[in-house]
Length: 308
Image (tube, rainbow, N blue to C red):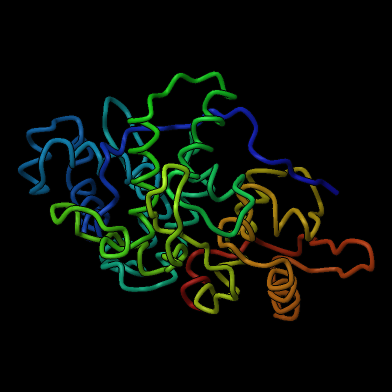
């Protein structure tokens, strides 16, 4: 039985998003554009005309397409849709117009657990931050310390922009108090994974918004979505292991429990419910010491996730 450790020394990615959080319409538009022209992102001018956005936004969109697992680099600066991208965004895919909340949770999963290299803000805030809430200045102080411990020399500007993109990905512009030109929310804001929870004074005496992770049960994350993501996590982090501990599923960096901010008891209840379903790919074995998860049968497909 493997106990999976937290993120080590990286590598991590701190930039590439050009300070833009992903916008709601970007991913379906990018998928369709790449399908028709795999080399689109090799030419900024052509991308600007085709996608109707500026040069920095084109570069940002290329970043998000990769990080959210919709397409991947292929050949000489080309891109090709991933299996996930095709299954979701194709004309007859499961959710071509990004209307299904299951897709939003899967995009969050790809961004928070699958992105390679891992995005620093996501790895740190979802995998290493041990408190239920934070302010921007507290998170930025932690970013500085962690960056230095990794041997990096990132400026406060770079770290601050990266943190702001993380916040704007999950917190609506009204709650984040950003400028009007940045007020277009992205798709993951609707998950309400991070919510404003009041204000408090920082070390300099200024009032700051307090952000809290929403940790209560999330019925909008279906058991099928949870099972799919757990199998994905298992395949990447411990492919040779026959069992995983409940603690690893609930608390390891990049695990469903951490990425979805679920309490260990909620994770256990989900595993028990999955075990009761005929043909489930996983089985939970309770124990007085530490419950274990065992593999059973084939991994759940995306088609079954959406057919659930």
